[in-house]
Length: 130
Image (cartoon, rainbow, N blue to C red):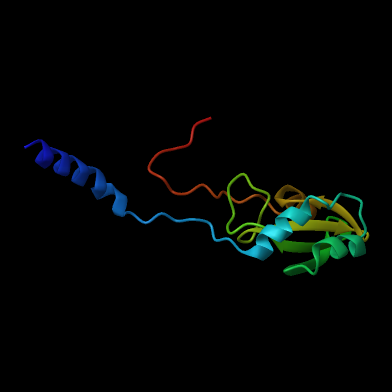
């Protein structure tokens, strides 16, 4: 009788274990870019940054806010998180002005191109509180 109860209890705990758990994908290039990003400092010339990081995954160039900006995007994460420095699905932007690194991350990118921060809050039945 005790074994029957134990089997029933274990069965009830096992019911919730059939859900699929999503993990971030892991790619060697993402990890390498993330590690090399720590060697890059504001004020470095473009050639030095490309020497450390390699060629960018995406390149954007334009005249924004009265200056000419070049933005290199390197894949460092598998997805964007609300408080991360990534944009466009896991890419970290490196913002260059006058052939020098002006800043790294989502905040610097948004300031350079003068784009508002989107509301990425998922549509949940409850609200986030401070």
